[in-house]
Amino acid sequence: MSSVQSFDPTQIFDVFGMRAVDSASFDPMVVQAPGADLRCVFLWGQDCYNCNVFKQTAMLHKDALLDLGLTWFECNVYDDVALGQRFSLHGVPAFMMFRQGKRLGRISGWPGLPQFTDAVRRLLAEPPAEQR
Image (cartoon, rainbow, N blue to C red; front, side, top):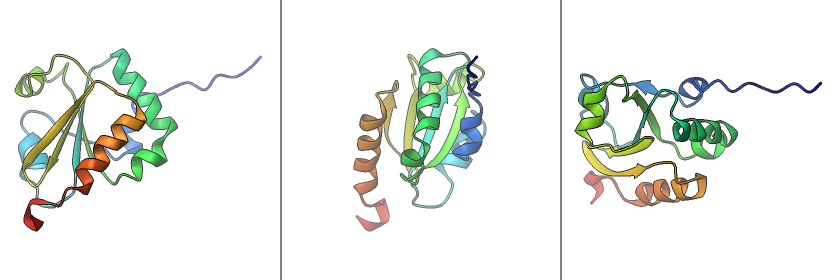
């Protein structure tokens, strides 16, 4: 009999240090917080198949994703519909990217690890606003 390791979809939040945000805390924690770090907000839904695909992939390739140096946030938009509406989400997962109060873009769906890391690296290569 082989043992199958069970997947805990909430483990990703601890491993990546994802801070929970909601409609009330989003601006103070993500948009208005000081710093030039690239902030990635993982917008997901409970029992969302593609969200769980991302979570599993992220756990399997955590070193590659952690090496990107992102500051991570998360919100279950099924519980906070207003935040999903704010960004006109038509599906999850979605990854919103911010730096120094500016929204830099959105990655819709889970495009796969190579495409995700390429998009993030392009954003990281852009100098912060104060250096332009």
